[in-house]
Structure formats: structure tokens, C-alpha cells
Length: 516
Image (cartoon, rainbow, N blue to C red; front, side):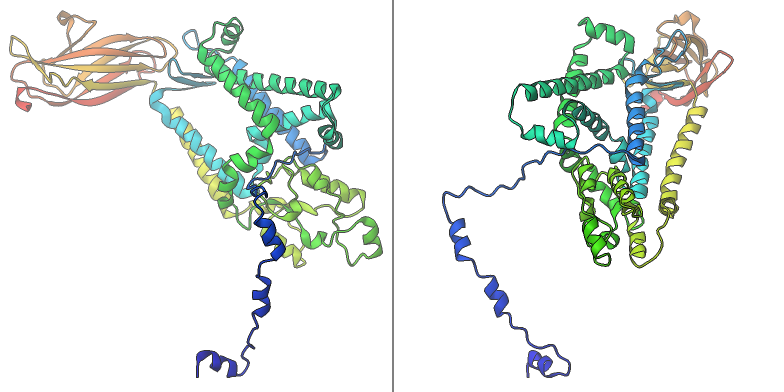
């Protein structure tokens, strides 16, 4: 007896299935096959034509919060280069400046040198962990409120409303033929787009040079060519991405929606449609007649109308949802108007949604943030920040780098003494000139040193050199040992001759005939 026969004859076995109907349903439709075989039929398109998104104006807590974030972020971006900060007569007075020519980064009272790039790396790490923290806690809130693409798109959408009216008026204008009135509106709107984009690019270059000076040079045609090229590129990208592509950048171009999915779990706060409460959808009149049959959703589509990316949140989580929560404002307004409780669309976790669907009461959103993952991300972020602050407070403003000459490794002088040459890099990281003393430690008695600016007759075991404010000075130093002296490792020590008495040292080696 075969296995199949045994299963059929056993007690409780499932009856044999007749797959004839399924196979028959898979047979090709003759009409469809003929249509597909038509040589005049155009090939199928793999891409969908973009559907313009005209979001509706809405007022509510989340919309007001978006206004606040937009004003703060744009204010920081445009105003920061013009803030002055007194660092003394030897340093620039711009509060935030990326001085590429002198390889410095200034941020208020902080000055970062090239060899301190680990501070910049720390800031980038903090930014990355901050994104992880925000995403794991409240989803794509960065995308919905503070992302530059979101902020400038929001600005351009308000420009649209100013010229073309709200959603319905803009839809009608899009469908209208190109007449004088439509052409005038479009040209006026695009001119404002271009103005905003130009000032966006212009503000960016102000971070890399003194803002008033660069502005004067820019308008007189005296600025560096790279300044004009940078402004042109940023003007074009802002005009195109913010004015025309908009949600396409968020959905298709930006990698963050794909990455953030790995950081969300069932305990992350996300904008959610509570389908167990909203379904079945029906109008207020239908619900009044059959209250047990219909849910709270009246299918007014206001949540779709206000969405800047055109997403219907009722279809579940989608890559186009940037978690701006404007759909919450729209839905809460409708629920208030028809006398139903708010929260049909709300910030909630998937875990809490399952509990609510089973009859549990809603949980305050802040409670979802009180979990180990949030504290771990926050702790790591804070620890890196505290470590950077400690390093900034404890760092020395005096630095020394020593590079021994390798060709030749030494020179024999006529009196039998041995001379080595070194290149010293003395850094004075203070905003004032300082006298610094270079001293030899660890060499036998009789060791002498002179430099390319100090004659051999003035050689001694230490030399004083003046280093300009906020500058690095290269010094060619020569060290000589009497004949027969022991060679090996020794130390150069650099000490500032001011009230701070900061010092730095670096070990190197002295090479003689016996070392080769």
C-alpha cells in the first residue's frame, strides 16, 4: 500500500482535492492571448507616471509644530554665518566658520585643528546615533520635520498656496489650458522658487568665509570661482528638488526610508490608522442608520488630502509616509466636527494597537518612549557628548611634532662630533603669539641644539622660539653630540613661556655611526 493510500484510508484523513478547476482557471484566455500577440500593441511600461501631490492646508498641533521647526531650522541656516564672536585680534570674528584656507573649524568658543579631526568624527557619530534614537522612538520624525528636503518642500508648498490657492484651486489650475493668467502665475511662482533657491546656495558659502566680506566680493564679481559654482549648483538642486520633485526624493532617491525599517520594531511609535475602530467605512448618514455596521471612519479622505507625499495612511505603513502627522490633525478635526473621539489616526506602537484591538484602553504616547532601547541609544549618545566635552576642556593648546631626517641619517663633523637634523612642527593654538621653549631631555652631557634661525655659536640644550597666534611654525633643528657619546632615544619638550605653562613632548632617536 502506498503512502497516499495509507493517508486516505486512515481515520480523519483529509479528502482528496480535485485540482481540475484550479488548472482550468490557469488556462490562457484566448481573447487576452490575442491582444498580447498583437504586434501593434505598445510594450508595457515599467514606470508609473508621477501623480502631482497638492496637499491641503490644515491647522493643528502637529502643523504648528512643523511651523516652529521650519522657522527655527531656516533661521539657524540663514542667520548663523552673520553672528559675530570676538576671539581677539588674531582670529576671525565669525561665530561659525569652516576656514578651509587655514584648515580650521570655528564654532563659537571652540576651534578645531586638522589633527583634531576626531572631534568632527565624534559629532558625525553623535548625529548618526541621534537619528537611530529618533527613528527607534518615533519613526521617521526626522523626515517629517527637520530633514532639509522636507523643510524646503514645505516652504515651496506655501509659495504654491500663495500663488495658486489651496488644494482644489491648484488641481483646477493644473488641468486648465495654458493661457495668460496661468502663465503669469507659473512664472511668478517659479521666480520665487528661484529666489529662495538662490539664497539657499548663497547662505551655504557664507559658512566658508567671512560673510560680510564674501557678500561684498560676490556682488562685485571678485569672489573665487568656486563660490559662484557652488551657488549655481545649490540653486539648481534646491529649485528642482524642492520645487518639482518633492515627494519623489523621499520615496525614490533617499536611502533613509530603507534603512530606518531596520530600526523600527513593534514598540516604536509610528503614525497608525486604527482599523479595528474605523472599519467598516461609511458616511455619517449611513452610520446613523446602521451604527453597529459602520466604524468611525467616514471616508472623507482628509488624511490623504493633507499628506505632503500623497499617502493614504489607512492602507498601513508605506515607504512614502514621512511621519509628519498632518493626517492626525486632519482626522482629529473631522472627529471633533462629527462628535466622535479623537485618535482614529494617532501615534501608537504596533504592540499597543494589538492590545487596543483586544479591548485595552489607549496608552499615553510618552510611555512608549520609556524602554531599554531608547535609554541605550540615549546613553551612548550622551556618553560620546560628555567624552567630547571633557576632551575639549582638557586639551592642550600647545602641540609638538618631530620628524627626524632620514637622508642622511647623521653627519660627522670635523671635530669628531655627530650631528642629526630634525623637522619640528610647533603649534600655538591660542589666539595670541607666544614664546615657546624647545628643550632636549635624555641625551648625554654636552648635547647642543640650534636651528635654521639660530646660529651655531648660540647653540645650547634649549632654545626659545616665538610662534604666531593660532599658527603652526616649522623649525629645522640640529642636534650635535660630542665624539664618543652614547646614542639612542631622547625627547624634545615644548613649553609655552606664559602663565599657562602648557607643554608637550615627543620621543625620537639620535643616530650615530655605530647604529648603522
